[in-house]
Length: 92
Image (cartoon, rainbow, N blue to C red; front, side):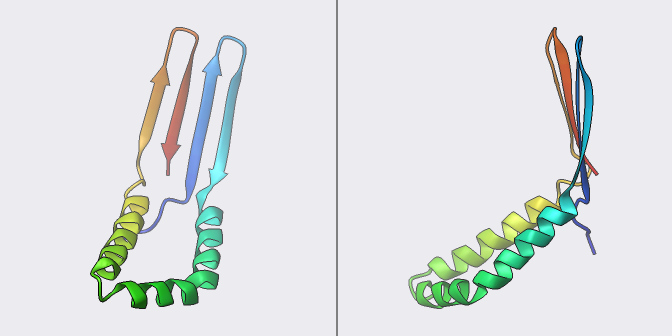
């Protein structure tokens, strides 16, 4: 079973500042899950109404693709550099 990313580290370094920030992604995922749970009756009604037209299946596949994309972020590292500084984002 794959696990979602838990932390994101943002590091900003230039000639004046050396700043790092740890963001707890598991809290954002928890908040998103609570919102999804609260909206689930509306989502199910929308899904049932759209299923005969073919859009319901598309919505289910889009939701699955979004969750798979979120889970695939683990291990992502992005470095942005210019002559004045460096920004590094790492998802753990």
